[in-house]
Image (cartoon, rainbow, N blue to C red; front, side, top):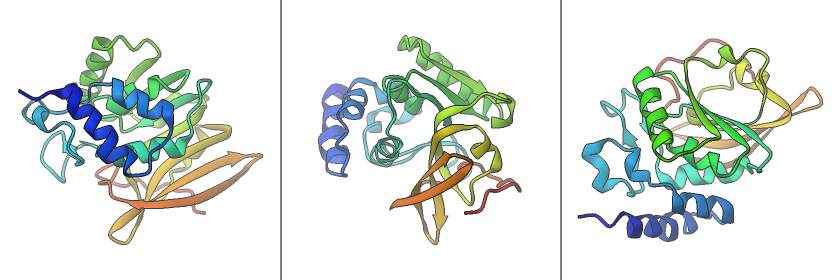
Length: 218
């Protein structure tokens, strides 16, 4: 029988803190959210290993990022209690649940309808009132704008639709593909201009199996 409370604390100490995650609110939230309910049932005993969990065939399906990679990306986002956040590639809702404890509101966007339904069930089970899950593509938000966007997967480029969905002063945190790994970037939209800052190398599979054609080139 796995002691998930102990496993969660080991994750905090041996993966997150050791990997440079120091933001107190983020660490506290990740200590609280039960990661084990978001992974595939067959892998629950392995919920807290520092590895990717696939929601289907490895390499050909959606996935859940390793804890340290996700935490480092969330730390880059510098989410405040006033922020409206869009979590792109929400999977079964783990990152969405974490963000809900940091932000004013969060929407998890997931293209896979079955995963989106599972995410909604998980968030309801945890009674997370400021989080919701939407199935589909970012264009459906129309004129709605966000303070922060997180992309849970590597991008070849930044779609125009991502930039358009940011408020002025908003920021996108995403991995861009560079050689065999990705590089975590913070993109900031301010005064009609866009800046990019590279931070660290990490690995995540592609956000989507098929890359789109639109892109914003820096």
